Amino acid sequence: MITAEDGTQAWELLQKPNPPNLLILDWLMPGIDGIELCHRIRQKQPDQYQYILLLSGKDEKQDVVDGLDAGADDYLTKPFDIAELRARLRAGKRILSLQQELIQAREVLRYQATHDELTGLSSRRASLQLLHGELQRGLRAQTPTGILMIDLDHFKNVNDSYGHVVGDVVLKEASQRIAQAVRSYDFVGRYGGEEFLAVLSKCTPDELEQVAERARGAVAERPILANGAEIRVTASVGGVVTVSEIPELDLLSAADAALYRAKQTGRNRVVIGSCKTSHAENVAADSDQTTSCHS
Image (cartoon, rainbow, N blue to C red; front, side):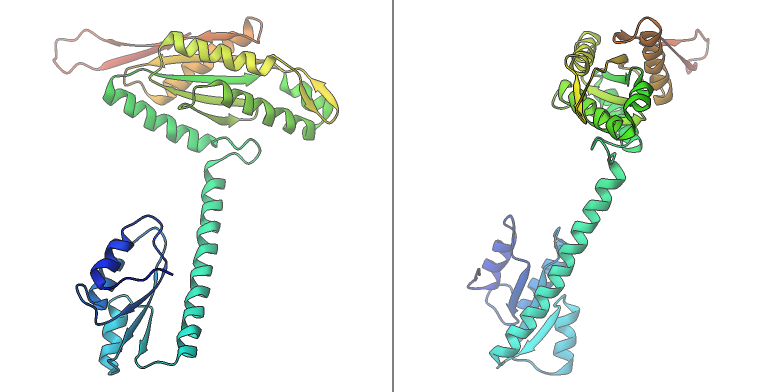
């Protein structure tokens, strides 16, 4: 239990990290009174709801209304019975407990909405949103952004030979290896099936190729153990780097084209394509910008 000598000290305590969420306030306090403190707490809107029990010697109906309107959750007049105070505090704790359950349920739903259930990586939708944000940051800062499309080679053979349960184990392990191969401040998402999307901020073409080779090598370096079997898996990687305002679909298409080339030239390899912008000659000062991407 934390106590404060007056309303001012109480408000200062509530500004600190991890403040209490069950509060007993006296209406009449030096400095900041209970009503003003209620107003301040509700205006601040902390991350977690704070349950307020307001104590007062005022017992007129309008006083009760004023206290509840100020933001108090419950109101107890003095002198009060200690048993009643404890009962009201238990009621407050029940409400806070329900709040915590709702917060946990919300976080679970938020995680499920943004993450792939099998691999734990970002979902396709979340990955595309992260890509959009990173491209915008890179454009503002005029720093290069790299993207990699990573696809497990002949993964259908794994499912056909060992079954989908084993295939899931292989997918999960491969995804972890890829995620560990990129830089700590980059991210990897599951783009779909056995394909992954990596977004690398402030990444030059040379750095992109190094990370891509690291990811490819991490997948291929040793067999994946699943259901007593040692399964060798490789990955093909295609990537591009941009510093220009190029449509995201064009970037993804360019990375996908590079990936296709890696597949066509033997698999288990890296191909870094390019995305370039060129300005068509035009007499007008505001001539249109055309975009071309190729591998």
